[in-house]
Image (cartoon, rainbow, N blue to C red; front, top):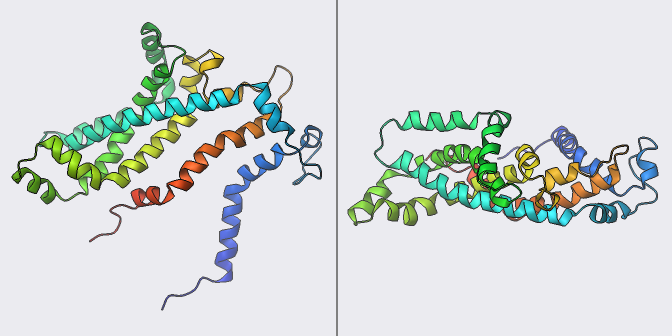
Amino acid sequence: MRKRAGVSFYIFLSLFIFVIMFPFLWVFLTSIKPPIEIFAGFNWFTTNPTLQSYINAIDTRPLFLYMWNSIAVSTLTTVIAISVASLAAYAVTRLPIKFKGTILGIVLAAAMFPQIAIISPIFNLIQSLGLRNSYMGLVIPYITISLPLAIWILATFFKKIPFELEESAKLDGATPFQTFRKIIFPLAAPGVFTTAILVFIAAWNEYLFALTINSDDNWRTVPVGLSMYQSQYTIPWGDITAATVLVTIPIVVVVLLFQRRIVAGLTSGSVKE
């Protein structure tokens, strides 16, 4: 018989959720306050809620253009990174290649480099290719920083697939690529999907490369676009919080729609058979 959780557990759980959600709740409450109440002092709720900050956030800056740029760049990065990483992880984990551990170690070490350490050569490369102020100008460095981690994560999922399935496919005359496409990749789909979500969110939130490479306002992404709301003398916190709420909605929707797949990918292989 399973023991029921006590009252103290639910109290602790409520406090934990409140602490986690407090920044998001505070941002939303600030976004519906009149500007005079934002700077007046610490008040949880407002007696005069307004959507003026949302209107200002859309009218002051091209917020929807920033969002479209982030969606385009993040989607391209995810598709290319997952396609390359899945093939690389399959080759390293399933094919008879020497020094597999060394290769994965080098891949993981590449993911440890801070962005500021590689931004100079990346910037020179993008400029020499004439890709500044373009989607591909950001996709290339985003793949550079996301591909090593994606390979490492996918390699852990591919290792958990029984080798007997692959051997059976070889006996049936399947090529390595056919085995990957028809057997390995479908079985690792939860892990691939989880990795894709992580890559997408990382590309969506990236700031340094987006600030350096795409200086034209028409090509800016959401993180850089949000930083453009402040002026020389004032910081419109109402507009910034309203814009933050609007740009967070797509990520929240993606996570809510695919939360089961994400959980399945994160817990894949956690139960020993």
